[in-house]
Image (cartoon, rainbow, N blue to C red; front, side):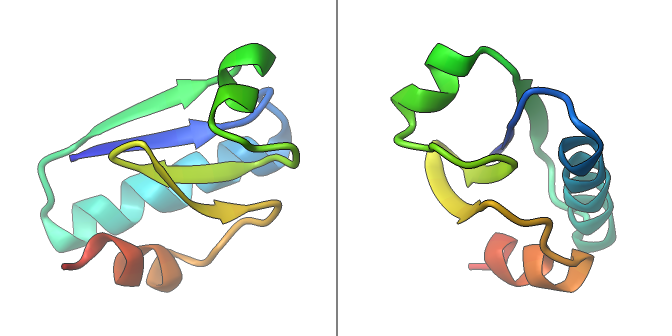
Length: 77
């Protein structure tokens, strides 16, 4: 599983990365966490508002920092 944090590196983006890492750890999911900061790469996802969370290339959350519990719900099948 690949978790992608789409954002320019702002404080909210860092918080989203922390929450995503914690959620994956609590669920014991083997994943890679990638931070995408290039604006052109972010726009290629169709994202115009950051931070955003993508799982396996599919954008799940845009423009907010979801809680650890919300991310856990998105990670579970």
